Image (cartoon, rainbow, N blue to C red; front, side, top):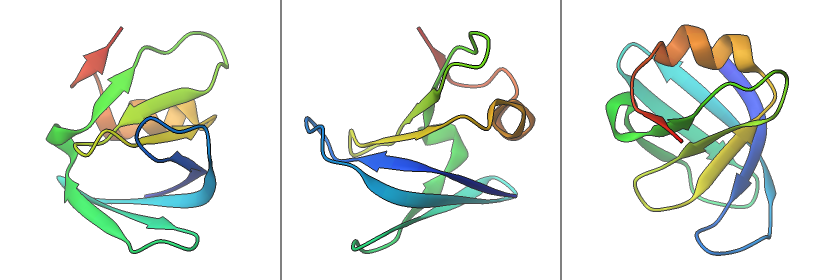
Amino acid sequence: MIIQGKWYPPESSAQAVATLNINGDGYSLDIEGQSPRSGRLEDISVSDRIGNIERKLVLPDGSVFATHHNDDIDEAFGSRNIIA
């Protein structure tokens, strides 16, 4: 599964275009102008779904991937790792 969105470095409002690639229990994140990141889905915290508001996924390094593709996030993460 491929999900388009934006990436924000830790403690910064700067943003970059990013693509989250989900394969089984793992992910890779391709960020424009940055080195790719990868890891396990279980290490990502996911914000609650509230209507069509952008979802935020907090990565282990504190960076954030944000996307409006809520259905894809629900499918990939189910009820795992939900944060308030």
